[in-house]
Length: 105
Length: 527
Image (tube, rainbow over all chains, first blue to last red):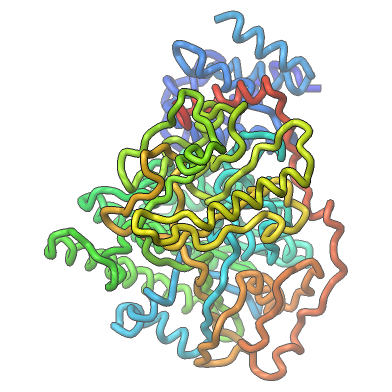
């Protein structure tokens, strides 16, 4: 079973790998936001989600995470939240995590 | 290596355009190719759309069996929600997978539905990728860096951007057209450079490359390309755009010529398109029609209004999820890209009740007329008629074919049909098939074959046994007498569950669906 730290490292490795190609100069941390900081478009995030599914060999219902975005004042996703979501699904605690993320706003 | 195969995709190519260009000397390489090979119309699948058609071409299976019906795929048979189609949605075995099992390598460039890239021997650069993620799409590891090292390579030239895609089917300002033509000319050159590099360093038994500029330019510039189409543009401007389009085809011919020269005499080269082209002259507001008939209800009383006759609602994709009052909606069309109508099954509704309602819709849709009494819909077909197969449950309940071959609008409108100010290019069922190589006849132009026949042709030419579940056949009329001897023996059909292996999608609960609506809103698909 992957730990949260291992999932974080997997995600950071993926993002650092592709971010070189769009010349994103900033450091990518759990606080870095997909849209505001990295300048991604919605299609980019869809493709990243597909790549993560491919990496772990399973489908993640990313819509559960993204669903909350439309209800936020700032519709964005920090990397750390994405990691929590993936890790939550790998360990079976995903729904609680999504609810907790929504409650904390 | 001998007897290789080059499969060149020309998205949307039609002999209605190519024949005059060959006659005028704009496409001498293609003309010479046809003179030394065979040509025929290539009838595509229903619906005549890029994703299901290319999926059929590369699998030899119909949409009911490969499961691709639109650019967007239903999450589950019961769900109202759709995701962008990916390789996981193709539930039939592709040519490159069959070749891989036979121990042969493939180079696959710019084909839709190839992300995530298949784990095959060879090289894959998927189509429909945003440029920032292109590295993720390329297989094997290291391929993207090799491509990036090509002089003057620009990943943006290969990328998918949803905004211009919307313009292709809705139209754009004349001053933008020149930019478009230039973009696609550069794009095709980029793909050629990648082919050249891979041919030099890493040749495969199958090299498959798709050029998609033909489709985009014909969508936007049909009125300039088709001599029969009218244009309100000023003559000088019209002439300039026509010249640009001609220049695109001249450049494409030059690229094709280079590809033809890469093939050795023992190699086979096949050009195919996923559908043909013609003019779309009007717009059918199908959801507005459904609302007028009482089959669809907007949550707020009315839906987003079309801004004009060109507005299909590409910017409103997936908004149906919350725009509709689901308690009072019996049927809806979710995307303006597939002409697929879905029926909402009521709780406890029997199969007989469903079929009665569907039959009523088919009858009423067949009778829709424009303001001058002319029919709008040429053919209405149920999924049982056109999509029999393992993926039937994910298919739209009804598929519309419009009189002008165009796409429907999903927007609300005070009138169900509007004539377009300018005709736009729209798909037609007849694409192109051209082939040259060992065993193929020379200078033969014959009638028509099916898009499902392409995969068997590729496999036969490479001497690979044909899986028994292929729905097409080798078009023997294209081959010299004795052409049957090379291969084409049938192998044992693979169990369906084996070829349909794809990541299972979770079934969505009502709560999940509500969340997905918000997700789509957040992603910018909906407001």
